[in-house]
Image (cartoon, rainbow, N blue to C red; front, side, top):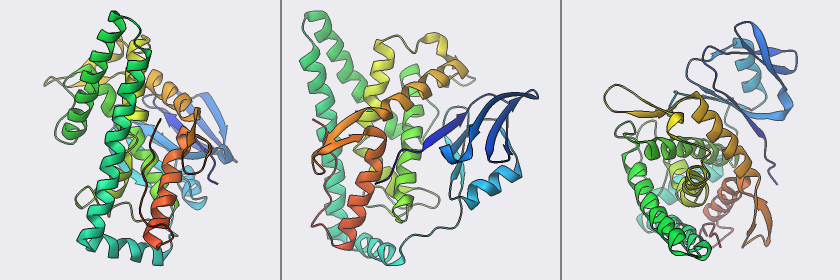
Length: 306
């Protein structure tokens, strides 16, 4: 079973990430701020203007660890990784399935069904917790927020976020996308060949497919929690020229901390009939997808939250 490898997020502008023997060292203005043993890190994610030493990049690639570069708003810029060692027969089966219209439609339907079911689950959970009129009003806002998140997902690639909620949800989607892509590549699938999202040069369509069933239970729900608990507020956002709104340094730190904590929470997986950390769900589902494509399972079954 895949274990949760730590993701090291470096968000301080002009920080310098470099290799110190078997340790990743983060320096800011020539002062060491953090040391992390390399074997504790699965992925290094750098936001904005972070400097990375060539020695560290080579070591990450040699050990099969990913380096992900995002801009300050969390948008994907680049990814560095070593040679792909996926099973060629599995990828061949994936390409054959993607070329068959009926199979593509079947997988797309399953992924959309998972997305809708989990979105409903988030709303139902809110309804159970709404014990008075004030909380019921909050539930209405939750529904509005989920609708807004759908619009954010649609518009995320079209323009920068224009309000605080969309800035928050877009940032969470970027981190979820990174985890889903890692899961897809871990099992040996081609992240660019999807069933639901159209194939475009440079687009990780299959990772976007996998992301759909987790948007509401991971990103949307966490965004509402952060807002309702006051963990993220107006002071955590900056307005940019042209009307764009972005999380600032304090906002990104708060969201990343909450994201990492959320991934450690456990849920019972209905097929495995055992508890699984939320952060492992993309890896579990990627394995189920691979088994489906190999013919070991009749059809892909998305994760359905209770």
